[in-house]
Length: 398
Image (cartoon, rainbow, N blue to C red; front, side, top):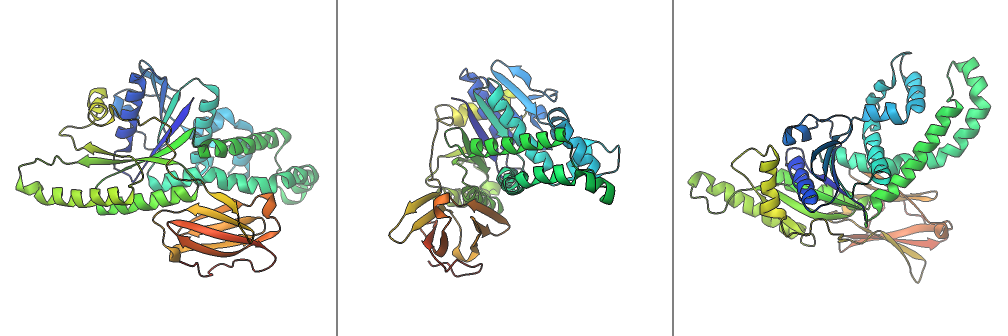
């Protein structure tokens, strides 16, 4: 079965090196593998010491590498809708390239390209080297967020185009999308739905977090894991990079070793339910296949890093004595940081700067959220028939 592996983590922790090592291991196992970067600051070409183009490049038997150019994807695959949007937002003649200024647009098309590769090409494993944590979280939540809006407004939009197109051009000098652009918008909408299903399918896609034994990095790793679970992604591995050798006979490194062990122990305690891999801090720059191969030999050989592992449960609705209950696994969360409320047919969960709209199943259309408890790292939300909906800022019980 085809699989997708997404590598994420704070900037500078060595995601590209770890992802590249997995790609080498996969190719060495005889699996046709694609290593792809969605980070605009691409460095896979530097690691493999090859000049990479806009399409996948062969680097060794069974291994291909690609650094996605989202503007190229937009122009090649969605030219009609890009031309329309470019004309709507920018001066005539600006071209679709100006759309890179719209937040999230480049990230979205990078993901859509990966989904197309998964469905249409014969790679057995696709390994994705993502941008730093914040951008990756925005990237992964964007399809769900945008498809939610399109699902709400797209049927109305098709009617509006037919009715308002003549009026808008004459009265407001605004060109409504033509039939070709609307068809491409519909294609994007359908691709977003399939992309959501693909990324949330735990038999297909897993997320692996790369970290380092340093306080700021460890804290961001905890938040990263919490938010990934909020959006229902399957995290199945933690990689602690740049671990100093424990047998160093040098007083200068004594305090560093103590600090590393302190934060490595914190990672083991916080992520005890996940497989944890420790990667040495090598004496040489990890550049070139030979250097990356050291990670394969020292850490990955014999490890089942590609096996399907479902560590945490999905969000689930359960029937209760008084109605239904929704359970959301939110490891590392604090109840005082969680806010939730019901908006029409959606439940909105907000944590810090992140918000998720969870569409409620049809069976709950006549139910309202009446209370919530946070226990055992799980948010349990009760739904009952009638009035008494949960309001923003209401206290979540411990």
